[in-house]
Length: 307
Image 1 (cartoon, one colour):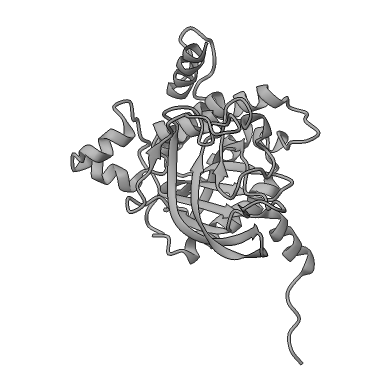
Image 2 (cartoon, helix red, strand yellow; image 1 turned 180 degrees about the vertical axis):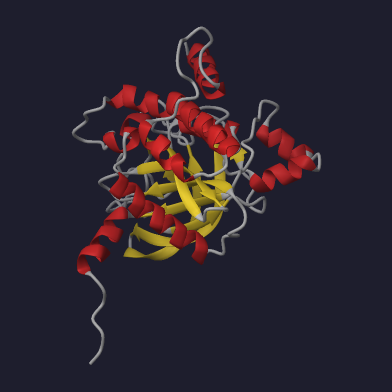
């Protein structure tokens, strides 16, 4: 049964199961609205296809798992995120990317995750250099870090993190820990390593700033996936198996690895695999934001000026 499930997942990521009637190139309604900002018709068509594939391979699976109306998870935000919410995250993504030194002339895909405990949404996004704007192409639930009393845990740090070859990624072995968890997901799942980062930590001394190794990875398909959509990890960005496979297969964050692949790097080819089918504008950035903080700052208004 596990083999059948894996084949089905790979078929979905590649574009769907043969024989199924579906408008494969039709993106979600909110994405169609987002893409009106893209002036290049060829690029717009490519992004429409990418968004439709993400919806079919990732979003639809999450919606099917949890149901569209779930009292504990914001499934509505991945199927039809409101424009006001998208605009808030869009502004935050642009501000963070620019502060991190984004090359404004380089169009590229990236990921944005909203660590707000009440949302926990991951967005597949695209920075369109000619228009200097961000377009959201799809969404899924994820889990950020949760501070736990008596346990060594981190809060996923805010900021922009780059998938560099200095912190070489790898693939999960799929082995179970003492609690029966495959902590990095099933065998072969991709693990993105963003290096050592500073983050709030809770341990014996209480809560304090400390260093953690920031990873993005899948989770145990049986025990972890049902818990996505709420803070649950020890600090890393925990995503679904479907999102993991899609981001990996389409090389969403593999801009630097693609350069090595172009130079016929055996190491890059071994990691990415022969079936690797990257988008035309791969990126390298993971942006971590928090809409709860953004909302609070808006409600508070501008800081008072001195007299």
